Image 1 (cartoon, rainbow, N blue to C red):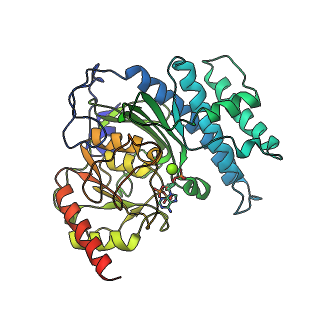
Image 2: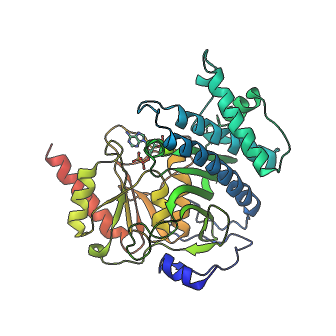
Image 3: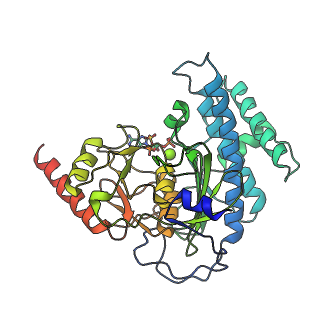
Length: 384
Ligand SMILES: Nc1ncnc2c1ncn2[C@@H]1O[C@H](COP(=O)(O)OS(=O)(=O)O)[C@@H](OP(=O)(O)O)[C@H]1O
Ligand SMILES: [Mg+2]
């Protein structure tokens, strides 16, 4: 890796030290894991998670490429994302089970119910072919899966998670709308150990390797893999597996200089509320709207300083939409909280039990962001 390349990428990306062999006490502000010191290494799990997510990313890239090249694709045809979603979950599940046959539990977004219905056979065959092609190109396992093997691998994701034992947490394609649009999406994989997120991997096939909106360096090269292990920092490498860099969140202290991320889809986050909060903070830059947990990845390397996710009333957040992103950001020095200032609790099963929304920023900006969020929520409530 050349130092010049590092300089171009971002001032907040610094040279890579070797990965630490053991985890150590986490910063008290970190919301993803325990403040108890646990001398535990998850290196083997991290290596497997990176491999699984990278393979799944390649599978998804292949499907998205053919989707975008196809001019007969109807706007409402969700079959490409369906095939890639299930294929990604089957592949990740298969790889993790091969690596950890003794102890395996996966909380995945998908299950095979719809695939077992009449008329789904052709879909299942397409998924199986994609998975087998990926396994052949990897060459590690020397097996060919049957359609039933693939359905079983998908269904291994039925765990409920919780506060006991270890559970993998997977969003096989986070940002399905972005995937269909040709925009951002992510394969998000995390490991919970006794209810705490201890590692996370975010494969973002369409995220530029250089900072988003950087006028000086064109975003020609895309495909980022972010990964973090508790106590070991956050890292990014190109999806092709070359040079790794350590990443850090933005050090911006003046909110006027901060730019913020939010969901691309207005249905997923209240853009009017985030705009009010940004106004209170004096943020000058317009919002950066991108799909999926690619937002956490981009924030972890300092592309922007704030991420606000403020779903409409009644929406319940799922752990697979935040677990990997949360540890990637906290290990990069950031803070992830709900809108009331509580850390996220991943030990309660598939759902997060939280107040109003999720906000993410660096340690310096969090108090002012929380204040602006509280005031804006009060104003919104009194105007109803
Ligand atoms: N109504 C509503 N409110 C809030 N969030 C919702 C809602 N509906 C869905 N989702 C979840 O949002 C995930 C997509 O993440 P983003 O909102 O960051 O990206 S995007 O703007 O939708 O593209 C998306 O993840 P995927 O389903 O994996 O794509 C959903 O889990
Ligand atoms: Mg999702």
